Image (cartoon, rainbow, N blue to C red; front, side, top):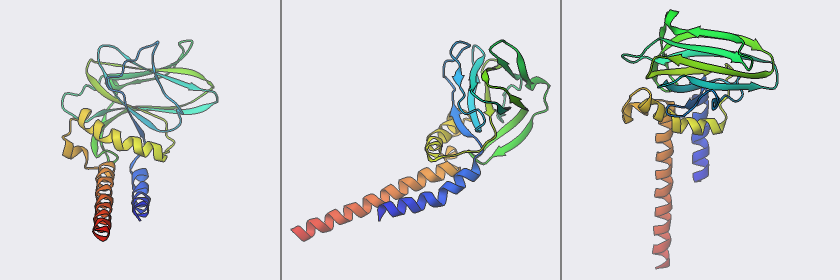
Length: 220
């Protein structure tokens, strides 16, 4: 019975989660990376959002592909006070040839609301380019303490493993990246899923306790 309840719950909410999200979230604030130790971007055509922060040095990403691929790149920042728009992106190959440059300082940023995490953003410059097989590098530069979101890819995929990952990351991103309190961080699809899961676990525990008590009374 309890398995059926959980199954029905996920069948109802998974479509909502998929519709509400375009990007698989990645939280990289605090992760050490450099030219020699970049963040790996796997499956670059699949849409992902990397939440990062420029601290004392530029941020680097490695984008390998064994086949031709269509690469979409976009810069965003949280719509928060004192957030710098002076953030730039460069895409180069191993030889240093530049394929894309996005410069936020010369872009008119536009506000938008993302229902995925129920948060407000500013949309910056974007680009789409068809690339041959190879290994590419993305460099994000800007002023110190600038928060940014690097969006890579446009193909929307949200398998169960990514939904579980989002259940953990979305509240964390809302609290640590957007500065929300715990209550605000849960006011989204994935927050409601977490609350629902806790409710189901509590309901199942209640059923088990009642059955154990009934069994104990019948045996006494």
